[in-house]
Length: 256
Ligand SMILES: Nc1ncnc2c1ncn2[C@@H]1O[C@H](COP(=O)(O)OP(=O)(O)OP(=O)(O)O)[C@@H](O)[C@H]1O
Image (cartoon, rainbow, N blue to C red; front, side):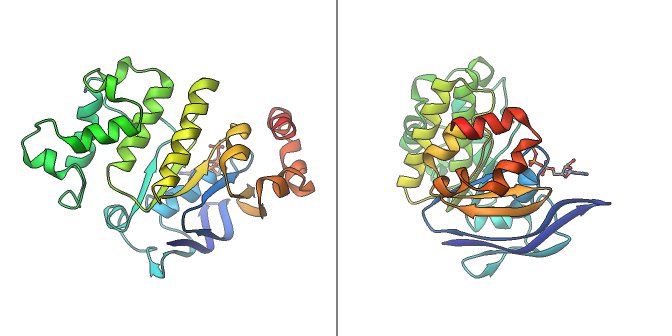
């Protein structure tokens, strides 16, 4: 599996949200995408999933051109995502949230919740296995609104995993979570990688990014300014000056 962005750009009027970005995410790695606020990270994810059409450039998966495919076609190709803002159904239980995610899925026959679905909602091993993997089994019949932020974030990830993706795009998965929940999340992201899923991680929590990624690309004003291992990124002068505009973020980088 190889996810490749080729000269990808997205302009909103005069704003170059993403500006001629090229990068390759290798099979099985955890790839970090970082950058100051408004640098184009979420827009990049939206271009990969097909929420936006690019102004220029291509998105390739294993040599297949995804650029003009609809979102559901990309999901069928193995691309899944979580959102920066939690999008759970608060009044449904944890298990029901997974069921709804699958039920709306174009590829539900291929989905690993499909046996559960065909059984008319009977409790099945598949959904429990995913809940166990996500450390949410004890919460399966609890309304999603009653979960902690960290649990909600894990449920978001479980929902994305329900489509059995080959590449998982995580848009700030630790936002709003406690440090402890962030650590559990990091461990679960590693477990996702351990199952052979490639991960693209957007995250402001620098300890998380530096601790679990194999490689990192840095965006600033929509353009890629650096790419390398966490150690290389931490000592990169361009990266440091990009973060200088944001004192808080610069301190995060320094202390990571
Ligand atoms: N739908 C849109 N319409 C107009 N401008 C947009 C749109 N989406 C994003 N932008 C602009 O594009 C730029 C990049 O935004 P984007 O959300 O991709 O950045 P980001 O790196 O994800 O930021 P953050 O870290 O704050 O989430 C910003 O200037 C933003 O205002």
